[in-house]
Amino acid sequence: MGGLLYIRVMDIARPEFKKQKRRRQAILLSIAVVLVVAVSVGISRLKPAAPEVERGTVWTDTVKRGPMLRQVRGLGTLIPSQEFTRQIPAETEATVIRIRMLPGSLVKADTVLAEMTNPATEQAAVDAQLQLKEAEAEYQALEVKLDSDLMDQKASAATVQADHSQAALQAETDKALYDLGVISGLTYKTSKSKADELTTRNDLENQRLTIAEKAIAAQLQEQKAKVDQMRTMAQLKQQQLDDLKVRAGIDGVLVDLPLEVGQHVTPGTMLAKVVQPNHLIAELKIAETQARDVQIGQPASIDTHNGVVAGSVMRVDPAVQNGTVTVDVKLTGDLPKGARPDLSVDGTVDLERLDNVLYVGRPAFGQEDSTISLFKLDPDGKGAVRVPVKVGRASVNAIQVIEGLKEGDTVILSDMSRWDNTDRIRLD
View 1 (cartoon, rainbow, N blue to C red):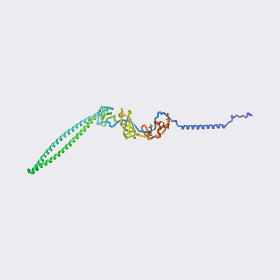
View 2: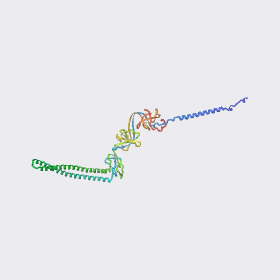
View 3: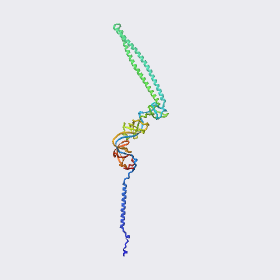
View 4: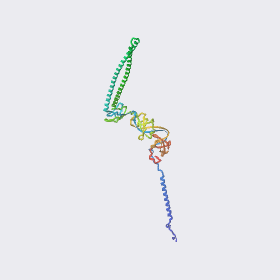
């Protein structure tokens, strides 16, 4: 009986257990999916780690308060002052036959640099001299003839004057005799008429003499003008002949002589250029955006790479060429050794002095009167965060800070364009 009642539990089917198992598996799967999604979303929302930048590769500066000297800088060259430069053009057509000096030579005013020839110029100089001598001879001949004619006229006038004096004396005598009744009235009237006639003739002779002297002066003046004209022409032709020997004209250095033996030159061709090396100016090229505040008279300094020379702005070109403005600086200090025309120089012009302003070193990028972004160092110096900074007036090495920084802040001035997409960096 007992054996019949024995039941094998393992052989009895329990469907509810299977349902519960499936339910637990579904719940666990759902939880796993939710966890995976949550982790993915969390990871996607995590900010990337700040990039590391080697501290030694960046250039930093600390914000300061105080006076700031505004300056602009430009590259340029030393050029001769026009006042102490002589450019020698050709006056006539000619052919170069000899080169006497080479560029770079020290020359005196009368040093012959080159020799040229032109047969027509040489003949013209000879002809002009002959014409001058001919005109001078004609002047001398005319002067002799006119002096002779004047002497004849003066002699004639003297004769008339003598006759007049004698006739006047005779008339006075006859009048006295007539008053005494010694001679007749007819005799007295005759002598008086003769005296009156000679008075008139004497006046006419004097007038003729005066007119003759004026006429002689006019004729001589006319002939003298012709002589002066011939002399001027002869001097011009002689000068053209002398110019065939090209002379320096001033003491200095021959910097250019673009001639070759056998070369034919025409009037106006530049033959040579001589400068006085102790009288140079600096010609600077300054960016047009920086040159707007440059004024005549502002102090400047010129670095010749062998010394710095003081100067002042003497000219600002009103035109802009290739994005730059030409500024001429007069050098007031002594030039260092080796200073010569066309020497490359660096120039700095002092614009103005700003008192009690907040400023920092000028960053690699950023224009004045704009808003730029800079990395400001953390207090511990181990990191830096990007901050917007409003800047004002700029100088060569400094820029005014308007907003965004305070005195004592340290910022990175180097080019940080590699990290434009991040707002924070770590400094290693």
